[in-house]
Image 1 (tube, helix red, strand yellow):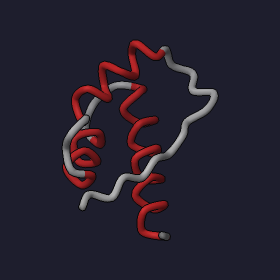
Image 2 (cartoon, rainbow, N blue to C red):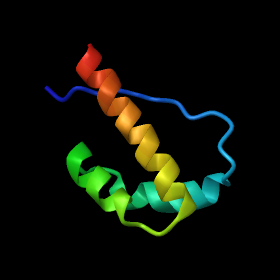
Image 3 (cartoon, rainbow, N blue to C red):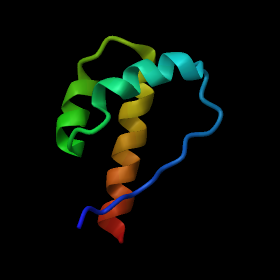
Image 4 (cartoon, one colour):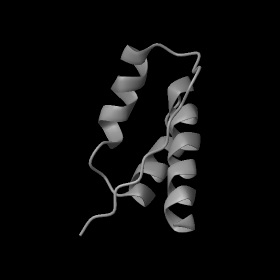
Length: 63
């Protein structure tokens, strides 16, 4: 059974279209692979999504 964890980002200074382009690159991947991919993407949204994904991983390990 796959564990699903959610994390929310409020007040991001980035449009949803730009964020969705970056999210599409990592959607469906494992968390470790997605974090590695986001670490080296030269986009502002990649940094924001990287922080959000790290937060979701921390929330999952706290459960």
